[in-house]
Length: 211
Image (cartoon, rainbow, N blue to C red; front, side, top):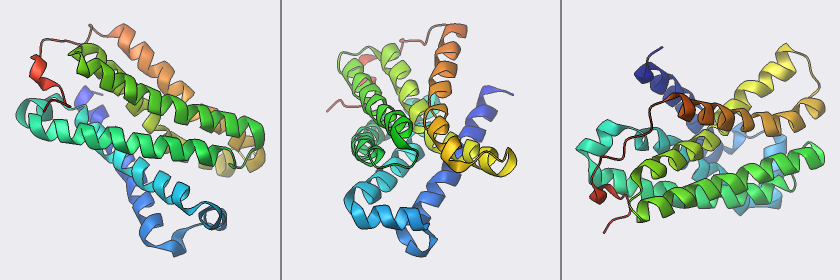
């Protein structure tokens, strides 16, 4: 499968999850009882996490598009700003929700570390572009998106584990709290090692945070 086809599949899966998140925000009847309980206990954290994470997940594939950067640089910059803010809101609210997630301490730690690393990779991407290190900026953005994509992989693994493999939810969920993102990072680093180093030939003004 070519790079463009892989991007298309990844983007389609992301938008399925984004559509589901929008549905949860706009149609409360779609929320499971567990989600309703979380909304009742911590409405700002839940709704902030769902909304901000959906925005980040929708924006990120287009931020990775070299065609968009080349043709619509100012749009790329503004989408980058929105992505960073969305990750901050989604990540910190996710850390808050990790402390009360189902699955006990292993799930708390898995989702909590995911939130920390998601925010950290976005901050490092921001820092690298501020000093015009475009190649390293792109690497950190790709790492950040691999963590955002945990929203997709979780929703793939969980029904497979519970409905297909017949693993009880209380056993599957703590493991998936780690499996939804750790392999994503491993595959990302493997991809970096296999590819020719990301080009940094683009001019310094491609800084997404430039005035």
